[in-house]
Length: 329
View 1 (cartoon, rainbow, N blue to C red):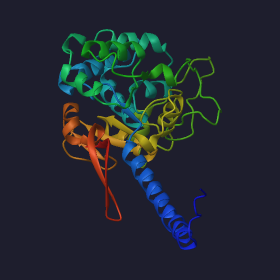
View 2 (spheres, helix red, strand yellow):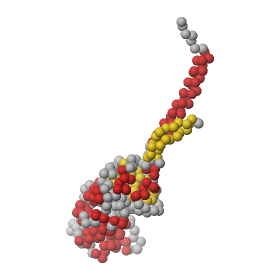
View 3 (cartoon, rainbow, N blue to C red):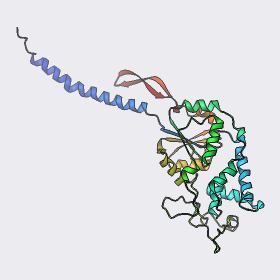
View 4 (tube, rainbow, N blue to C red):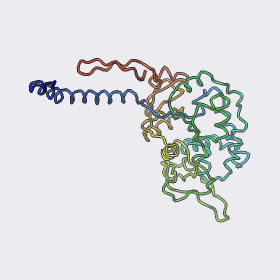
């Protein structure tokens, strides 16, 4: 027996349903997918950490020991008069980011490895103890983590080992990363890091470097940083140095949180697009998005770094859809 064909009114109703409701359902699905993706994606892809006085407190005594060793190096190895060293250290650090970069800028030439061995080789590393609290915090963060320090690799590895954090980071951006070879002069490469002016240290007729008198320079009235020589050393707080480090490590600054104890480095990082956390201070300064009195306060200060499994209730035009997914705390 042949079944009767559907009546015309019924066909019209089916067509009406398809024309009216299927596009609406598609729009609901698209909106849901968009919201789901937004909930799923964390704000940051990478956490970039300075090392010294950031992952451990200033009270450890390493910073004061470093300064003492630098001053001893300047006296013993470079023959600088001891009474000039405090002012010289202050001016070099202020204008070049590190004393080492400043010494190279004003004309002193020395072996980088030998310098680092002298300055870091005698540090009281025994003052650094394993930090299980920080280790637990770092390992609980489901985000890429990288060290970015001006120090040499040997020092960075030793500090991380003493703190018990050697396996908490994907890699280390250190002095050797940005300074793979010893440069005896400043090149004309357009990528050359330039600090505070365009002059280079002059060379005496006997072939020896003539030392630029930076103390005398600033003792003259109205003299500023414009006339200072460049340095071949690439380091923070140079914005070019930070950009180069990010490029080497394939880090997107717009999706990276930068932890630093140096206000200058924080402000340089902010100018290149990084999100910033000033460590060791309870109050934010210009350029800092967050301030942590201690790196141990990380979870309390920035809880959104941790991703928790929750039930996310998403409503579409009055229709409740319960979705189990990951949302930021």
